Image (tube, rainbow, N blue to C red; front, side):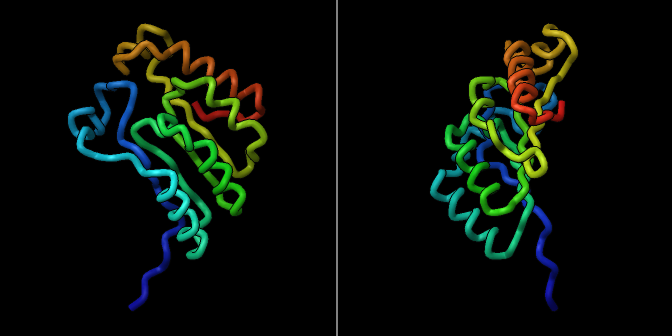
Length: 149
C-alpha cells in the first residue's frame, strides 16, 4: 500500500514567543523544554522537501521571526520554486525590510492583530507590540507584499 505524499508542510521552527496571548496553545510553560530548529537543520529539511518534491511551506510558531536566519531560509525556499506562507505577530518591523524583493505570487506573510486598538491588542497578547505590528504592516505594504492581517 502506498500513500500519497503530502502537499505541504506546516513548520514550527520555534515554539518560543515574545508575547503571551491568553488564547494560545503554546504557552511559555509548555514550550520551555523545546529547542529551536537550527539553520543547518532547516536547510537540510529544505533539501529533503525539494527531493520529494514538496512545494508549499507554512511557517508558524511561536514567533518564527525570533530566529534571525528566517529571512534567509525563506529566500532559499523561494529559490527552490517553493511557496512560503509565514505567520508572525509583527513585533519585528525592522526584519520586514529583509523581505524586499520576495515574489508576492509565492510568498505570503500574515501579521496577527488581536484587536483594533492598542489596548485591545496588547491586552489579548499581554504585550506592548501593537505599534510594532502596525509598523510591520506598513513596511510590508511599502514593499508591495500585501500582508494578510
